Image (tube, rainbow, N blue to C red):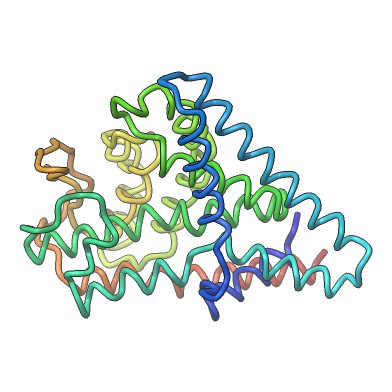
Length: 302
């Protein structure tokens, strides 16, 4: 397990966040996906599969080369450099700051979600913020940490490659139904465990405002709510946050001028306030404290 690198990477992201003066690895991955699509696109499952496999191979080779080149250096220097590199795979600070901005300027919701935002009520904006934070806790924080901890920088960046592929071509549209199918399925597999870990962490770490018995019921009902989501994974952290805050997320949503019927997640009140965004964001400090205690303890013990 890559305990020290994971701890260093998370600390750097928590304090510094994104390195805005350099081109982010995810942006470079996106450039490759665009280039491949322009050159080799066909309405073909095989072409899409080759896109995924080629990007994953490139990312693995580059990460492995970095790891190999640093293997001969001082161990502290190696951990520090790899920690700095790995921090770019984590988006805890960026996610927190982006969602927190909605409390100050709700109009910025248009930068965070793909749904139509022109006619959203204040409650709808707050709901979208809570949903975005919950879902991206898995994709942007827990999943990269999970793969970094198990497989080092190779694991973290292969995960980011898979997640980037899904975000760019993994759509069920006429253009991407076949071309993006492999990427979408790969993302479903990669997020299967992290999404459920995220949901469990939310239910474990958020306050018990309704008592322990109610929280136990939340654990039992989590899967029933989560399976209503189109994604086999996204419903878990969203449902967990809805249950933890005693609110109701989801519901019919407008995309590109069309109303999409969506189930509800949670059974609480449907009027969502800015305080609910604040309450959701308290997860970060609770998670940080837990992560630092666990990783620090394991490093000292091992």
